[in-house]
Length: 338
Ligand code: ATP
Ligand code: FE
Image 1 (spheres, helix red, strand yellow):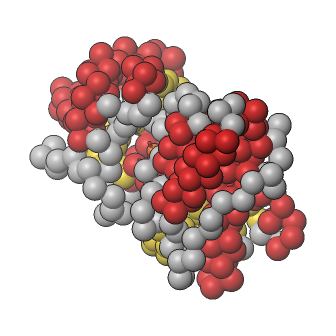
Image 2 (cartoon, helix red, strand yellow):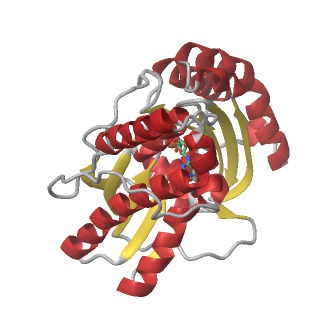
Image 3 (tube, protein in one colour):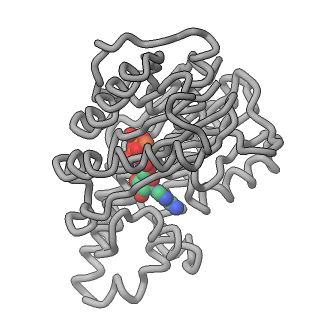
């Protein structure tokens, strides 16, 4: 069974080919055009997808060493994401599937992030999380604690009531005048800073929900006060600021996750989404595993941010279940686990 996965929900155009659930190729074109704007510009994203989609898919099929006629089905991200971006991948998937007369499989982008743990490379032997497991899904648009009962059955136990963790980190980085996206830059600076140099407000939200907008404001105000006294404050303290910001975000994330483990008594705990590339968060997972006896699952760096391999693996499982999608199913932009 050969599955082609296509991902185009935000600002990465990605295509992957899997053979019987094993990854043969994964090609991603990122978009630099957004850098100057400090955030993704939807119109520019759609245009770049339009330019990249054909060469990226072509490369993925070539690198897999097959011809497109050998494909068994095409899996594509149907949502959530930016509508203009989604439409490029969705329309391409539909056109290609109909020209090849093969089934289409729609994949939820967020389920894809969670299922990144099941991506298997050639010759790779790795432990996959057993169902049910908990997954902390932290990305640019979402921060959720998900109970994963099966690959196609996920329950959101808690989620952010305002900003996502990645979004908060990106905005604080922007306030500091660093580049975009801020996540990787903050990560790099934080490794050299003192996480206890500064402290920022932590939210008091009941249950398993998150909130990151207060932290953003607290960060902004602290910075503004310090810069008033010393214009070079940010430049002189950027490592400590990054480390303290990262420490606070990780602390907020882990406290609720610990509560979720306590409530569900599920000790198999995974992390997924772009922010799971963060080294501070990865270290915290190892620390909690040691302290509280969790079995943890951390994806490879390449499978944390948007990629088509995660779409392809969900596509493969749906293919085995004969769970196909009709050609008239539209893309959707809103967050849902349907
Ligand atoms: P969603 O999946 O919710 O639709 P998205 O697809 O835009 O959103 P991802 O691509 O999964 O999000 O993740 C992007 C986010 O991950 C950005 O906010 C980015 O700053 C963050 N990120 C990437 N690497 C790191 C890192 N090393 N440390 C912290 N954050 C990071
Ligand atoms: Fe994503």
